[in-house]
Image (tube, rainbow, N blue to C red; front, side):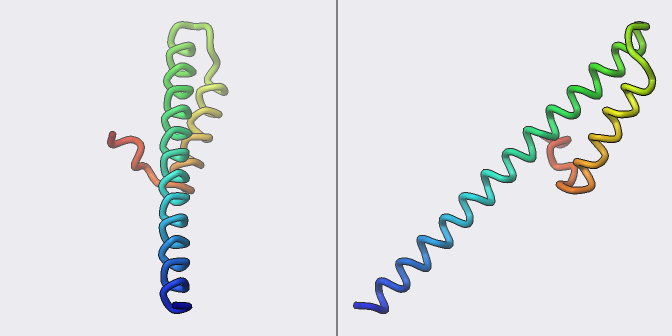
Length: 77
């Protein structure tokens, strides 16, 4: 009986870890999309004359940091 409970506990822990990993992936994906949106807004503002190149560069830097840490999978969906 104890062996069964140990296996059930292990399987539950694995499922919990997989769920947490999926949540982390979704959050990283959303954050990447938000950074990409901010870059687009900064670039648009710069082109319209209401933004600055520095703001665009800052948004690009933030996006590049995110890609370096989490990958660029959010760009493909």
